[in-house]
Image (cartoon, rainbow, N blue to C red):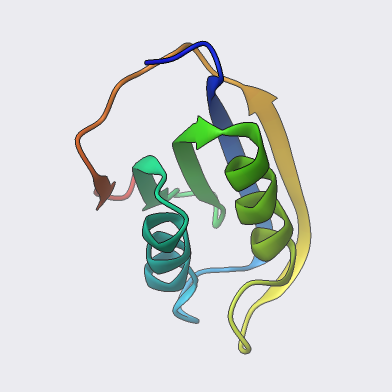
Length: 95
């Protein structure tokens, strides 16, 4: 991990499950060259841990505020996360 690499935890609230949000989010993260994971949470949110450049993380956050066409995003919470190294971007089971 380089000095310019950051890890963020992003949580999307609203109508973000059952609308293709998780898959579209993974596609966007991979297109940006980010690594990490995405999963649905039992509380109805979608959680992302992503590692990459601040610029690409910010682009992902902005995308998450809109999501795919069927989503209705109320807000996206963002917080720095402990640095992690991932090989790729993956889906994780619901937690």
